[in-house]
Length: 130
Image (cartoon, rainbow, N blue to C red):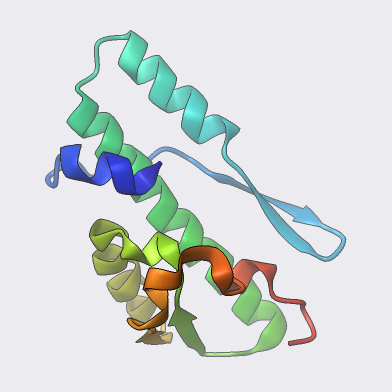
């Protein structure tokens, strides 16, 4: 959904919808109900699609950075590889990378495999022993 909304995005918008990060026995789950509920409410209230899109994307950026930080707390890893279809979305790539770097991560982007979409295991699905 995010890549389809990218073209309508208001680049000056700094607001973000919340994606809740819920702990589970083996990690965390991103709960998108708040994000989707807020986006729907804004649309029903007459919010511009470009603003809704930006807040949606900014919420994803925040969630990726937060989840990566939690994974670092457990694994003590400081290097992150961004790979897969999510990062074909230019806005997400261009905003996640600097935010992760500000958080102290060394970030690598796998430009060759992004065209393979979800055939790779995304970082949040990696076993905690990896």
